[in-house]
Length: 165
Image 1 (cartoon, rainbow, N blue to C red):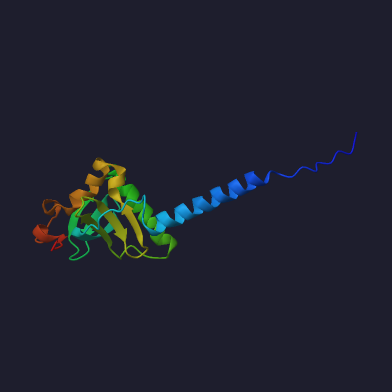
Image 2: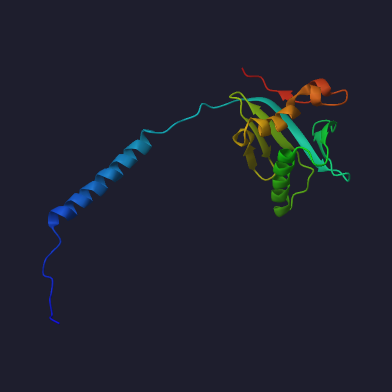
C-alpha cells in the first residue's frame, strides 16, 4: 500500500456553475411566488343554500337528520342504508368526541354557486368538500337541501337560500 494523496482540487468552474444554477433557481422560484406565475386561482364561490342540521343515532339503528333551526325531522336513514352519509357523520362525531364537544351544535351543509357542496362543523372547524367523493355520494347530502325531503309545516323553507346579489 502506498500513501497516495489527492492533491487535486475540485474544478472551480463546476462549483461556480452549480452555485449559479442554485441561485438562478431560487430567484425564479421567488419571482414566480411573488407574481403568481404558474398558480391557478379559483374564483370565490358564494353560498347559495345553507342548512344547519343536527344528526342523531336512533336506538333502532336509523340516523335521523333534523333542521337545527326548528328541530323538525328532515329525514331518517334506515339501518344499512346511506353508508356514505353515515361514514362522514361518524368521522365528524369522532372529531367532536376527541375535542369534548357533544352532538348538540349543528353542522352546516352548504351548496356553493360553483356547484360544490360542503359539510362544515363550526365547533371543530372541520370541513368536508363532498363533491370530491363523486356525484353519487355528494347527492346523498344534496337531497337534504331539497325542500320536498323535509317533513312538517316548515317543509317549504327548511334551507336558507342565500341572496346572490
